[in-house]
Image 1 (tube, one colour):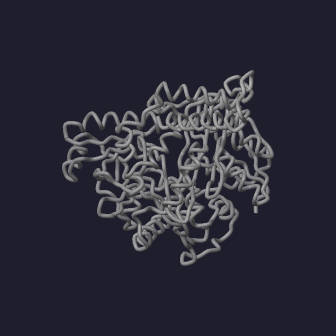
Image 2 (cartoon, one colour; image 1 turned 90 degrees about the vertical axis):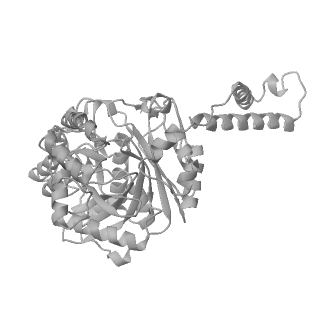
Image 3 (cartoon, one colour; image 1 turned 180 degrees about the vertical axis):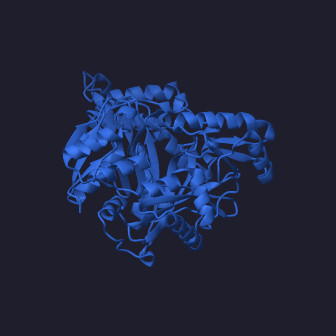
Length: 509
């Protein structure tokens, strides 16, 4: 087993990996940019190495600086987390060349599955079902027109090297194709340095369901159950749950077997995810493979009882999987919310700034993976993900109730967050009935939001706050006016209740 691991990442995922290292008796090493000098992951690690300016290109994406930090620290392995260099085959290869173990798949597996078109070609040969379309980038507008006419509109244009919705365009008619193709290519080139774009048949209102796999370096591969990831905004996941409400045991087995076949076709080792689109008839189609740990991995951990980061490290250290497929059981239900520093009133634009106050939830069935603390300044240079809040219960209803309760306990002051959005989602009748698809959140956000408190409510809030914070003031009758103790407490309780009620209403915006 490794004695020291460097975590080539930041924020909540760096803290998450550091905790796994601590539990396994491994010394964790952190890296940081100038913007992250006071970050939580620096405080949690045994050692920390500066790797450059705030710009990710000059720090967290700089392979040479990270390899140098690993050498100086004496780390035997590097965990990439997710994002940044986690799916970069050049980084994995550089680790190998430096004699440092990369905790993840081989460069060859990454290259095979990292390009959407390359992945489709290999999955086609492996007999994996995928959405009708091209397995290579279209070379011209004429070819795109012929393909689109053949599979029928609407179609989806996608960047071969893409992710996060970049280089993606929905085309409803032939008259839109040229403009959409030009825009998709241009965006793909800016985002990924590669303008290759392919075409898929657009499935109307699909569900996005993914299958977690785990594979050792001896050819053993397991599927660990699915995650429902349909609640998305701009093709970015917002809420995830495990298991999916629509997947029964037979469908899970069939999806899992396809996922294992896909991973083995790529000679894959370590943790990975096979993503599927599922239509209204529960037909599922291969979408892509994520060759890394997923943001939403905690819901799988809670339902399976397996620690995926522990297993990532153990597999990288040469251990065989110690469990068999028939031994795996899914128990209970887990739902995760991705908490972002973003402003709901400004089209969810990032909201960097100093966290003036912080109250974090806890209690039965609650897990919080967080990378923040009170007084820390959220930088503007990186993804605004602050934390992941997860509710777990014996069934979906209990998980939802616990998560909603935790959301009411959660308070982040000084910056804007999307916490109110999750209260809307969890309260929505379609969510409660599990009637979700990839267009669910767009529909929800177009509906009228709950109203903010009026002037009378705000006045009650102000009075309540004053009563709570100044119990000996004249408003409570203790400055020259007689008032019994129960009456004073009653005023404070009413004021506090008004304050909390208004705060919840305000947070729903």
